Length: 528
Ligand code: GLC
Ligand code: CA
Image (cartoon, rainbow, N blue to C red; front, side):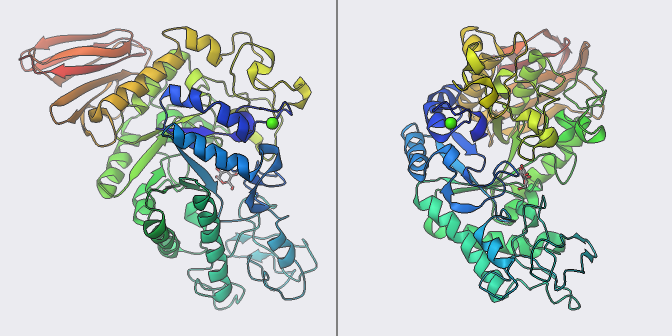
């Protein structure tokens, strides 16, 4: 069970207003208490921070604001002591424009790094089919291809189908392309040798250009996986790809189903963000109390991916991440609990985005920070206590990385940990339940009992051996009914839940009534 840490916003140990690695080490006990056993930390490497660290200037060095390489090694050790794992963020598609490789690549004279990035052959050829290029960046007579922002020039991992009329497009077996690929593997080895447990790979699906069907992209990642299988058999690779069938075939151990590549994930929680440019307005996500969503828009692709990757890899379905609005956007803490009940009973790897476990809000009206734009509101400091700066930092308020949520009654860990039925304690119980019952975990069998297009509630069974659990979820704001095949002898015993879930046995069937925003996880005994 993953916990995602945005390092600059998690815990500031030295009072400079920015979260850091020693701070994260101090909070490992908290993450362990919550029940998560793996941490993925966003990029923590040296960077000018034009894209919050996704613009790396030195892949081999921790950014001073987060600490030192020695601190990062200590994080690995401290995590391992607690039987936890740490994944770093690997950014193979681009570097910062300030990276010394790019600085060299910008020079008009030919050098080792001339072909490490994607440059056209003239400063005046900035309009190439399918690419938006940057012109006038340096004295080199050419335009470069940015990977994300202009400050993130794309590294040259080659073109799957170079256009013969555009000789600047190098094939994947060009010696300079191979050199770039070797360098990426050496970054990986460097941190695995230092004690890291693996990587989340940024923009994993777009490292090779003009690659229909991801053929060459997959070949590259397969090489990376082979390296792990040979030398680092315990290490894990998790991709930002959002097409698990392709990512697992390419060698990843797990892939996120998130907001990119298709709309399956959005259909659960976030249909609203793309439709309305981050403004929530009556859009029908399934986990929405309007009750107008469609669970099959998620489940169909999910089950389809599951069938394709069986026994080869996993899907990770997160509560959120640093690129999308928070789960709490437009939801009460009761609705959040219900969403977590779903995430913790799916046959997928769950991930808790820091702060979602207490229902941290999406702060909509903040100024952009470090290339965050709308994403900034999901990146604010973790709220630990009701004290100064929510216990995130002792720095003066104006020195904080981002403002803390100052709303009266804003959630915090201290307050919620004392209240038995707070969101935090409920999420913790759900995690504990999942960890204690293999049937609820990634390998238990999933049988849908009621999961129809446009209908509520969602009802399913999870099973492993003789263990059986029934999950009933009604995110809508009204009573909902369903009929499931369950005899009177099969008594559901409630383990956790909220609101009304009534069972009315009726021969071989049972009629079920789920109250507004009600959910329940039940153990089913055979009655004998
Ligand atoms: C990924 C990251 C995002 C970043 C982008 C460019 O989508 O999650 O935060 O801006 O890649 O590296
Ligand atoms: Ca700090």
